[in-house]
Length: 258
Image (cartoon, rainbow, N blue to C red; front, side, top):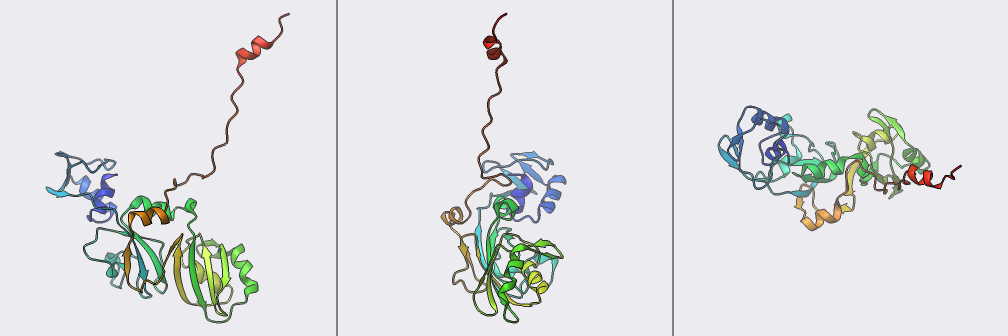
């Protein structure tokens, strides 16, 4: 693990803030003062910041039922309520996976595992996210193919993977993209206003009956079950086998002598 990532997970602020600590010489590893940002650290290393020992934080993965009215942002960047107000104060520094806007609600993954967060947000992972969408009026389901084909919005070309009717004004929407306010903007382009947006599922992980504002820490078995390891940016298809190059010596032996 890179040193700045280690310090960030231990609660010393953002990675940039941790890089500043390293560059100013506040960090020592096994008695040596290091200023190289690419320094690697593991559990056996004795890390000190300003002379005080730093312990390797335990990996934490949790799910949170975000209520409406809370922002997915750093609490240092706003005076409004954020999802961090709903989490224990003694937790290590964590990040959210799968942003929800202020008015939206539902399932969020919270973790201090940077590799897991990157893997879940990488486009190659194609993580399916499921939402219950309530509109301001009855939806004309003849428009559903337009949602699946794609609509241009401010953030880019947006499309959903599946859409199902739940009620006259209520739909279940599944997508693998993650553009800003994607669902709201797509329905707006079709002449509808989203009155309520609830994310109920990420991959195989469901919101279930968790009350709004509550969180639950996942066990290691649950993390492996819901978020199996998959190399980022690599295709799951096996590489095609290459035919061996012809041996010129063999060809030479096969040629008749004149």
